[in-house]
Image 1 (cartoon, one colour):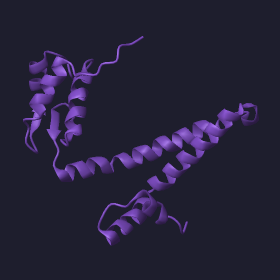
Image 2 (cartoon, helix red, strand yellow):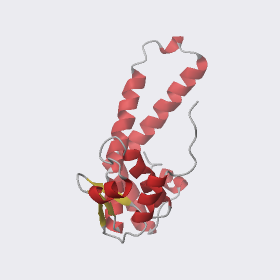
Image 3 (cartoon, rainbow, N blue to C red):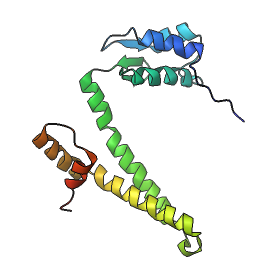
Image 4 (spheres, one colour):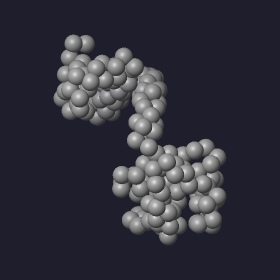
Length: 163
C-alpha cells in the first residue's frame, strides 16, 4: 500500500518559496530551479515542480510553463488566454470518450449498474461536447455580456433552454 503524502517535500517547498517571491510577469528559469533543488525538473522529476505550482495556485498565484525556458507568473490576461485553450481540449476528450463508450459491442449483456453508468457517462460527455462548441461558448458569452458577471449554473443552463 502506498503512503499518502500530506506535506510537500523539501524541494517542492523550496521551489514554492522561490515562486512566492516572483512578481507578475517574472520568469523563473529551469536552470535556476534545478540549481535550487539539485533535481532534473525537465525530465523525470517534474512532480517536484508541479507540487510547488499547485500550492502557488491555491494561493491565487497562477504560473504557466514556457517550453524549454521555465515558468512565468501569469498576468491576468495570460490567465484568461491560458484557460481559453482548455475548452477545445475538454471537448475533444469528451468526444473521444463518447466514441469509446459507443464501441460497447453488446450493451444488453452489461449488468444493470454498468448500463446505468454507460448511459450516464454518454449523457455527460454529450453535454460537455455541446457546451464546448464555439457557438455554445458564444451563446454564454452573450449572456455574460448582458449581465456583466459570471453566470450561475442555472443561468448558464437557461441560456440553452431554447435549444
